[in-house]
Length: 132
Image (cartoon, rainbow, N blue to C red; front, side, top):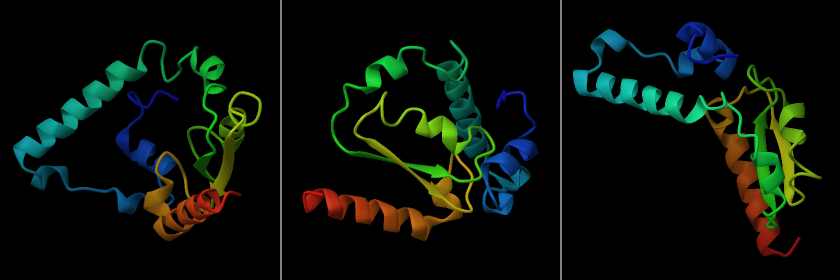
């Protein structure tokens, strides 16, 4: 999906289980905040266009990461299903583990389920510090 040509309302539906979390009254925002938002979107677009939303070298490089890594993925991701994230774990990224956060969507599972995300991160960190 082209996030840059998708209407913002549709993008928000796919990103958040409850799009109201992200809704803003753009007409009431100060000009400098709107300018910063537009520049952030321009920068995001520049980083993701060549090639679009994909780095062909990424999969071949992930095996270099040898520390335990936790991917938290929105179980109802509207952009990339959890199977996509899992495809990077294991063989391509041997130290990685993916856990789904339900009922959230990506790329922002922490917005939909902040307590669940915090709990998983803390559990992961504690397990690592205990040598698990």
